[in-house]
Image 1: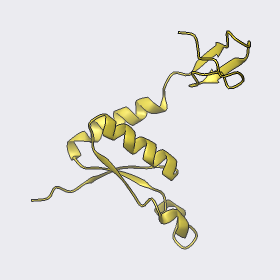
Image 2 (image 1 turned 90 degrees about the horizontal axis):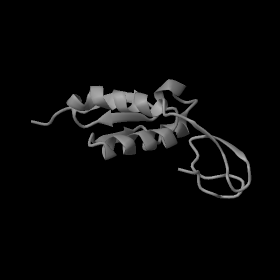
Image 3 (image 1 turned 60 degrees about the vertical axis):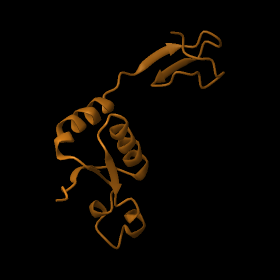
Image 4 (image 1 turned 45 degrees about the vertical axis):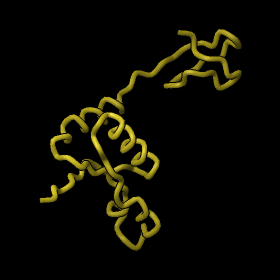
Length: 105
């Protein structure tokens, strides 16, 4: 008997869909991106029907998968000053955009 896959969520674009799917797979929750090519027909179909979707292979992964994606959306953002050039860096960057120096540990 084949188990049905579970639709977890829609992604705003194919880049996020792929990132989220990879994140879930790396955490041991096999996931697939569906509808990744429907963006080409946006306008012919309603826009909400053209967004890529993340589907889980195992229903029991639904709650931990949602928690993982929720945690991923709320990663702490760093603010640091580059020790090499003095540039102020914000966000999740661990390397200075100005000179390429790594964030101090």
